[in-house]
Amino acid sequence: MAHPKSKVSKQRKNKRRTHYKAELPTLATCSNCSTTVQYHRVCPECGFYRGRLAVEKTVIS
Image (cartoon, rainbow, N blue to C red; front, side, top):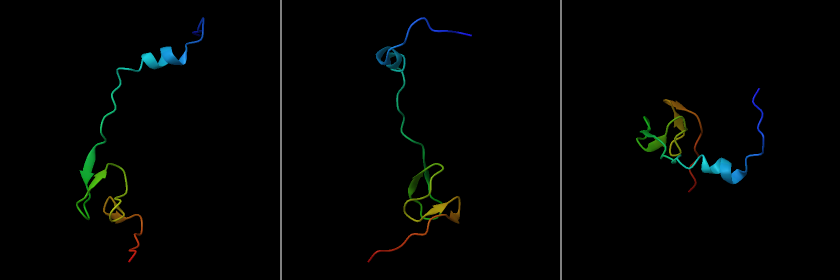
């Protein structure tokens, strides 16, 4: 089994990860209200997920 000869510092470890670029999340349109929603998330506007009501929204007036 591999055994490191010395500790790798946080700075050295993080230097290896500099090629990583954060990407914008992929967006879809809600099938119920047609707003843009992240994939695999409940719609923040209407509360629907995959055509079903997942979160009951209340109207504050």
